[in-house]
Image 1 (cartoon, one colour):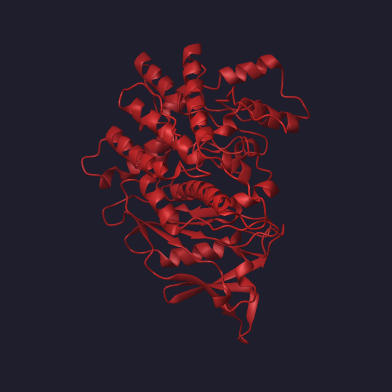
Image 2: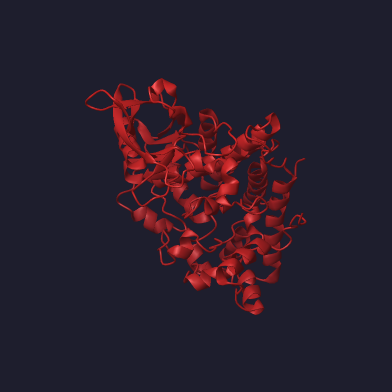
Length: 471
């Protein structure tokens, strides 16, 4: 067995593959300007220094082979000014500020459909339980503080859909919300990971019809696998931002599918994905062993923090990320199930890891309801994703640009809003949630996020930035 990676060297900016793909990250000056309402940054040395210090906790996007930014390198990033000027953006108001969260139960025999309860069980792997609605709701309430996040009051369930001859068909299933039923198209799963898939667009149409009058947004979590159009193999989720609805499926985030998806157990999830050894390996595999000269590789790593910064600031960024990685590794490890039915410890490990993935995904899709576009400035919870593997590599936090947009969105419903004070309160809410889960098996992401949050709070409070690793 190969020795475990020490994660000694870190990648804090784009990989060598980014240049080959044609991606150019916005430089420091544009990243600073993107956080301001005017779209312009001052030339003050103090402001530049403060932003460089801030970026020690906000690495750049990795842009690995096959990643969203590598496949579409010319996409224009959305600055705070661009977001503010977007006329399609829905304002948060006192009358319409509640986020509703609906979790649709398993498809079961009660729908009247033969073998329907197997729709949400992956083929040829062990089984476990997806995250519970209240767990995801509580995470969203911390992430989108101070907006209320409530469980959707209307009953939501899948029911059999019968054709004109009253026959039950696999081609459609009904989604009942309250007294109304929407026909959802289904199809066989192309890669046979699941028995069948549900059409995402039909699901979103049903969610739009169900949007409460006082809702800012409605997000729906479902267990069945989804697809958006005929060319899709699958789709994990989607938001219609202008319509203020989002749908996320738990199916592909199941850790029991990691072997099938080829997720690297040592590096495949944030923050371990920032390991330089892992980044170089993926780039070499794609480039046939070529990642450019060693001098270019070193320059890319130096550029990782800030092009205009000193070696001291680079070291500071590496030290902080090293603490986050140490927290992840010090948490109870995930246990890979040894058989078709996980043991109690294995099941706990899988359930906690599954929750960490789904919570981040739901927060991302809900961000689109606030008109947040995919982010290209930093590694960020609002980055686009082209695969489940890329999804797991992305962080759970919002970068300075995306957080500035959320601050503007919620300030009108926050009494006596002070942005720095709101940030600290929001971070502490998230920290409290992470502390509930970081000690459980599979809680590495929560432990790492708690450590990151602790350092970010200390930075905002003007204290030395470090975190305690809990055991």
